[in-house]
Image (cartoon, rainbow, N blue to C red; front, side, top):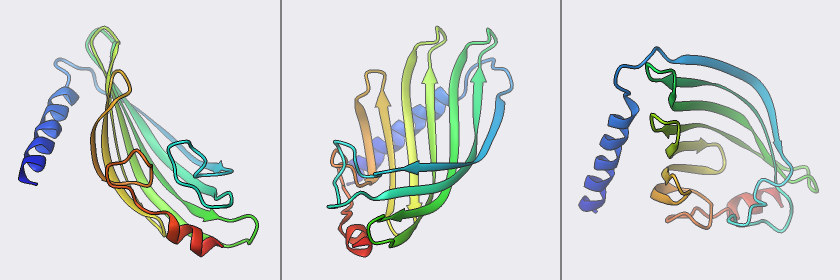
Length: 168
């Protein structure tokens, strides 16, 4: 377990070093929202478990993106901070449960503009509780997977059975 924490801290430290571009311009910040977001079947993905009915995700979201460039004007990092609040519901029964949380997604780019990696972390604090941190390399491979998520590809998946039961 300790080896995992040491490795995780090493990855975080390396991420922080990459996150501070040398001789950079001030970042540009763009707010968005509130925006209404609806997923007709939130658990419909191939890598997701399913209830025996569609679970509709319906949220209001807001946040901002920040774009960091080097002195040449090349984008080296884009951060998105997203807060959301809403419900997961069963349109057949009309039952719903609260769903809210926060996500941060950061994309890193080399000085030539090529994609290096993406980090994603988030937490859900409604009925479906989950917290995770992932790092995806330039080829789309997840190289760090920490925390709990419902995706079948997660190292520590969270069961959605309580959500399915509450909405039945």
